[in-house]
Each structure stands twice: as C-alpha cells, then as structure tokens.
Image: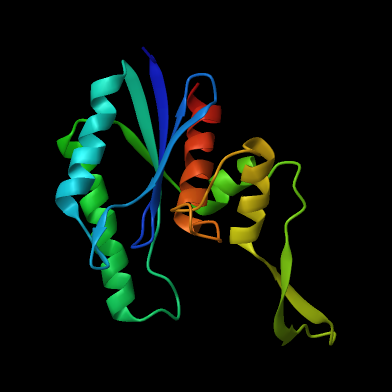
Length: 180
C-alpha cells in the first residue's frame, strides 16, 4: 500500500487532477468531472473522497488564484465558483491543502528550462518586439522532461495535450518536491 500521495488540482472548467506517489511516480491523471460543460459536483466529490481512502498521508496543492484581468464577469464568476467548490470538497473530506501562486510553483517546476516566449504583437519603448512567456508551453516542456512517457491527453483519440492535466501534474510535482 502506498503511504503518501501528492495531489495537484488545476482549478477551472477545463481543470485537471494529478497524483504522484511517494516514489515520484505519476500514478493518476484526470480532468475535473463535468456534465454538459459544467462541473459535476457529485462525481468531483466522489473522486476527492477516494483520495483519503487509499493512503496514510496525502496533501493537495491548488493555485491561489484571483479574477483575471480582461476576462468577463461571467467567466470570473464561474472560475471563483469552481474554486469555492474545490476548497469546500477538500474541507468536507478532511484533506489538507495549500494554495500557492502560479509563479511559486512555476519557479520550481521550470528549473533548468528556458521559458518559451511568444511575440505579443506589441513594441517596447525602444521599438523592439515585445515578448511574453507562454506559460502553458513552458510547463508542458518541463513536465515532459520529468515524465517523458506520460500521456497528457484526455483520450486515445485526442491529439493535443490537456492544459488542465499538465498544470495539475506540475502542481502535484511541486507538492511532492516541497513536502516529501
């Protein structure tokens, strides 16, 4: 029986869940359960409840998030609702958790990776092209380095990696590295 598990939950409508065991092995990935594009709270609760049943110790990391600039009120409200549901289910199932900022886990997970930059289409004051870090691609690069044979898609037919699964693996890995 596994004694410790480290869990990452990427909150969002397209969020994901990942579990890493005490030997740093990625043992589980999934998307947050949904029905018709909305979070299925009952299935999400069953999934979270199952975390407690298998091990002696586990801990969950979720992002400490806030409303997103230039995103509509409806999207921000939905995001906040999912965050509240997630925290409520963790508390109701007596699971310990920590909220951390994206920059905190990215600093650890991206070690040794040159961030992937994308053109913003804007210019600096000096007239040079302005770039920003593509956090999704940089995280995928970092996680594929750690788990090169893992499948980050949601099904066998899917061709693209799922952002929620990738971020949840990164959160679980951060949890493992900081709490092992």
